Length: 94
Image 1 (tube, rainbow, N blue to C red):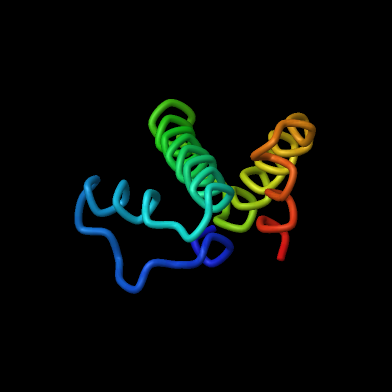
Image 2 (cartoon, one colour):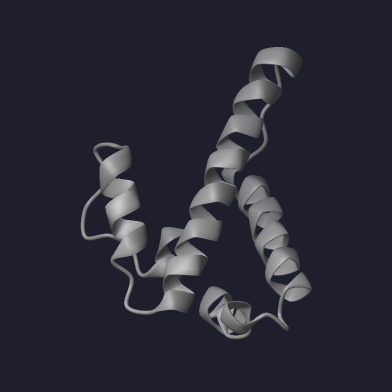
């Protein structure tokens, strides 16, 4: 996911580094994409955690990414007429 959002130079040690990385994007569109991608990653990690705890099952990382990718594509597509969303799909799928 981070590879599609101009990856950070090193791994995040805490939340403040993640937030700083989100804010330091080169454009408003990239800031928005980083926010959406970070939110989706956190949600899917949380969902996987709950699935493991409550159902004792896990999905492969590839399956989780496919679900995350579909969620972001749908989100961007549904808002494509809004000003900052018009160029997001290009940034996401490149």
